[in-house]
Length: 219
Image (cartoon, rainbow, N blue to C red; front, side, top):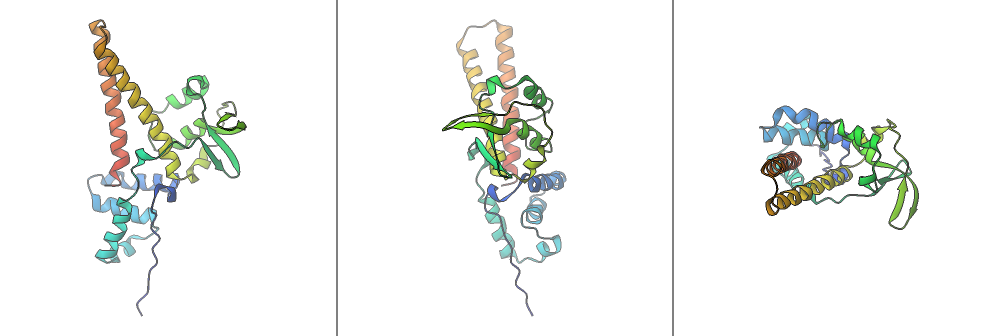
């Protein structure tokens, strides 16, 4: 008797947790030039299908699942969520980055890249802290203490994580463009001007690489 297999396919980043995404990222890193393997790993991790089942899918079923993945929203369009509730507790995004505690800055700066990898949950745990008071759009959060309870972020969905990541990417891009425009329009000593231009291009290349990494899985 022919059996019917029910396959639950996620339709957006809201359906995937950071933990699921990191497991996928770990397994697919050796297959960056193999789109077929990448798609199989997506089905394995995102749809909970074993590889024997994936190989046994009809071509139409396989293509249908792949098409749903390809319709995922581009990550850079996801907004920053300033408030998020985890296990019944409300957390708020750092309300004033210019006044962020020195310890928080140092702890974030220790990571080589601002990207979604094994360290990302620790970065989110620094940026989001429990809300102590809230009135309308105004709120305060707990002082930074360096508390190492970041594992809760593994169960938070990817729309929240991408919203935070691209908040910084877009912010940095705006700063880079402003720096380049300023250096092009202002008469500066040649050595300072060249340093600004070089630094701006390096930062822009880094940001472009982060966007390329984020988009790669959805091609």
